[in-house]
Every structure is written in C-alpha cells, then in structure tokens.
Image 1 (cartoon, rainbow, N blue to C red):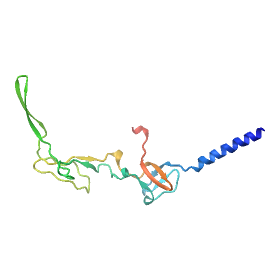
Image 2: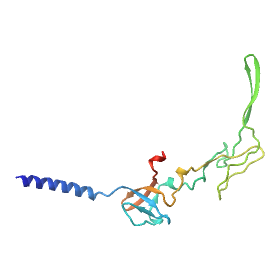
Image 3: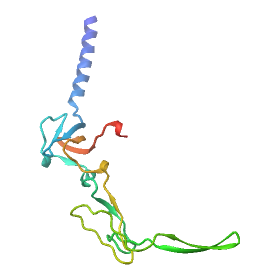
Image 4: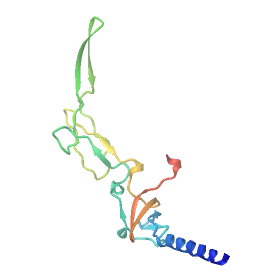
Amino acid sequence: MGNEGINKLAEVLQSRMHGISDKPQVLDFGVIQEDMSLLTNKFPVPIPQSDYMVCRQMTLGPTNNILAKTQDIGMPHSGSHIHKTHDLTCDHHGGKVTGTTGEETGPAPDPPIPSERVVGGDSSDGMHQHHVLIPEKMRHLEPGDRVLVAWVGDDACVIDIVLPATEI
C-alpha cells in the first residue's frame, strides 16, 4: 500500500516538473557585445544585430542628440519662437508702479548643435530655439549594456537597458 501512494505522488511530481520545463522562458537577460550582437542567458550564442529586434524607444539616438525642440505657433517644425516682454502698469498702495516682465527679444544663440544635425537659426528679432536633448538614461543601445529581452517564439526582442537598483 505504501508503495502505491509513493508511486502516485512521484507520478504527479514528475508530470508537474515536466510541464514546467516544457514552458519556454519568456523574459531573459542579455548583454550587447562589441559588435552589437546580443548574448542572452537562454541562448548563449551571440545573435547578430540583424537577427534580433529592439523596442522603438531603443532607437532614439545617442546622448545629447536632439529629442525635441520648441516651435512657434503657425510655424510647424521650425523650432523657432520669441520670448516677449510685457510692459506692466498697476496701482500699488496708492501709487502707480511700472515695469517690464519677460525676456528681451534680442538675438540669442541656439543651444549647442549635436554633430550632423540641422536646425533653424537666429534672427535679429529674437527668434531662437530650445532643444530638449536625449538624456543618458534614454540613449540607444551601446556595447556592454545589460538588457531585458522578451522571447516571442524564437525571436529575441530587446525591451530596455537594465540598470542596477542603486542607480535609482
């Protein structure tokens, strides 16, 4: 009798363990190699850059490239705008107070332009641009990056760069 119960338990445990091992791992860690190939824990053979995918956010570009720039109303994609000054007059405790608020509209230089990027220029009326640059934590993939990989069937897709929790 005791053997029958143990045998039944062994069958159940074996079927459960076999079922778990048949399920493919969906998420994995990997490292981007010097040649931009991907080496993952699940598939320890370098996957050439042409054979894996990346999420769109991983294609934003290198640190300090332009992510976005300002735009004046009615001038789509120009990046140009003016800071205006406003003359103020108000009554303050029985007397008139006058002054100016805002920034002068004299010419101002564009922020540093990353190499090989084309942007609009200044003008004498104060038209200028502000650039929002890609920060280090939003840059594209580089060799040595530890990454989170999702496996979709046999295809690897890099989801994001993984950082140590100490960088929070």
